[in-house]
Length: 165
Ligand SMILES: [Fe+2]
Ligand SMILES: [Fe+2]
Image 1 (cartoon, rainbow, N blue to C red):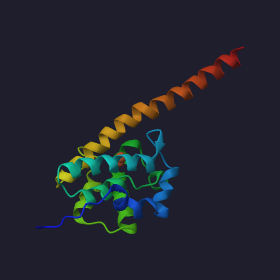
Image 2 (spheres, rainbow, N blue to C red; image 1 turned 30 degrees about the horizontal axis):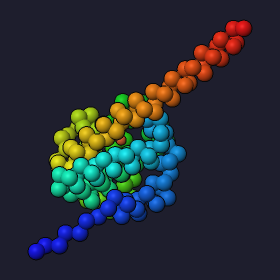
Image 3 (spheres, rainbow, N blue to C red; image 1 turned 180 degrees about the vertical axis):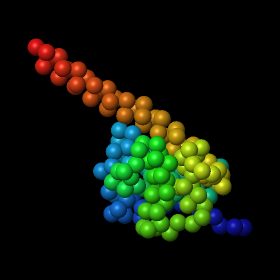
């Protein structure tokens, strides 16, 4: 009989969420919330799905948490489209500097913007995480960014009306 140890979400991600550089993502705006929160959402969803599918959920969850490990400052010279394409590589570089990243995790981080990248993902976990990222992004854009943009427009219109009087 084989003994398979189960890992819960917190024990898998603890060292990453407490890392000082990763913690700095709390100050980066992403889809109307922080990049830290966005990454946690993607990691949680990836954890549940990969675990249910009996995939490599530990490594997948850690890679999911690190998929957007970049700072706006690092891509400040880039256009929006360049940022779209380049941020996975910057995230991978930062992830490698701070944590042990294997081939599968590197593939997951590098191809998470699929199909907006130069190659196909190699692993099932990469496809799962890329899909989770898109689902979470759509939810966040709808839930947070839309209301944030609406709020800014309302303030702008209110100011314009006030100035006219
Ligand atoms: Fe991303
Ligand atoms: Fe993301």
